[in-house]
Image 1 (cartoon, rainbow, N blue to C red):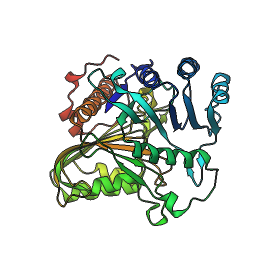
Image 2 (image 1 turned 60 degrees about the vertical axis):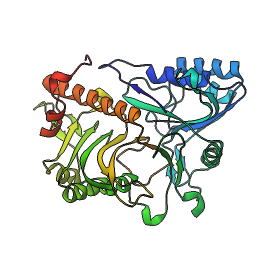
Image 3 (image 1 turned 135 degrees about the vertical axis):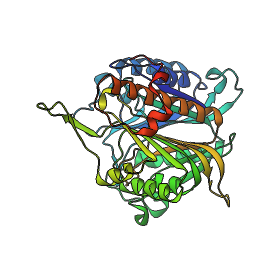
Image 4 (image 1 turned 90 degrees about the vertical axis):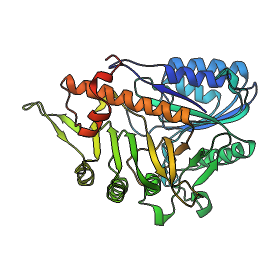
Length: 387
């Protein structure tokens, strides 16, 4: 499993994920298939470079990509690229749900070209928190080797997503969530949504994760938004149940525009989130769009009950992918879960970096809300990333 992050400096861009995506296409076998879906597609230079790779390697490329507002219009370069390949530029409404996907299914890829220490050659799945071509936001991307059978199941998922029309009703079989236990690393799995069964329609997938916490530990969360009541209810319940549990949350959005008279911002979080923050073992670090935090992940260190196990055991677990702390509709989403220590530590370091940046912003006078726990675990003197 290989992980990369975008970490743009204030007001700058970072091409790390764009370059990694291009490297993945370069690592593909000639004439092989790559299929996937992203919510949006940006970047003419990236698109032109990718097109050269696809044509030179004669790849068969299939993509569904959406746009649902006037600010996200495809450029002529992107539309021409779509016309050359099997790409559908469609509204993000897919069936009864929105397409929030950000994945690529590589049928044949040489991992040694991405990681010299690897000798893996075969299918792999990539899941990202960001959209194609984004370079101004903090994001993450992971690519995982998979079996041929798992590749086929993801291809079936892609075919359904690609062909589904707006407001088209899915069958109960199609609506079921698919969970793929990925090979190579213990407790590594891919969760494919939608899981739209009506009894579950208001239950965010994070709730099941939080319900399996089995005792004291540290939960770290990064999300652009946190406005889903089922998540906050589950967090409040977990904090009450486990006295040794501590929760740290980084949220991008939560403050409204500055009042021109007072120079202050109104805190725009719902009552459920305010109740959550009343617990001294929960800390929130909040910032608006100037830092462009678009990552979406959970980290838990402590006792956790994995599916199929009878009791909770000490674990370091990561969940990362496309899921925001917003709609309970589940949409079309992808989440990777893993206990791979290298990947867990990489995300733990990324959390520390983001916390350090936002604490630095507080020192510089930006309006953010900081609680005791984050300051305790990530003191300002540890900040190493320049503004």
